[in-house]
Image 1 (cartoon, rainbow, N blue to C red):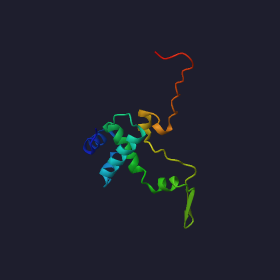
Image 2: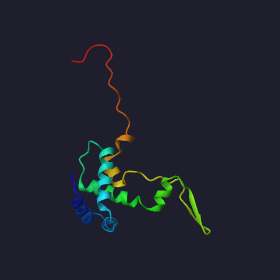
Image 3: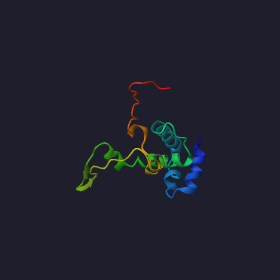
Image 4: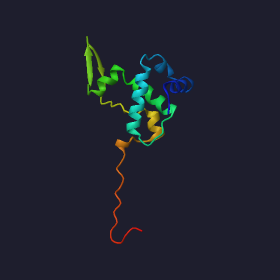
Length: 123
């Protein structure tokens, strides 16, 4: 099981945007939140430093006000004549790297077909 320290070591050695992690003050919260989300979305996957690191960075980046507004359905803001359009942008809850490594989270997968036996018996 990854630890906050092992994830930090992996991020610093392997991720170009490791400053997102190192500059963040509440690393333990981002780490715990990433673990909690990944465990609920991918319950049968053994988590690694890489997977948790990617998701933790994604969680921290999600604090950006632009992403918060777009997540709340805000289409645009105007302040003193300056307008910012968010459009229909929807941010995925799973980090793109995690999605590429693990596929769809369990709540987005098609349910398995139920096995039905017509006549006869299963031996």
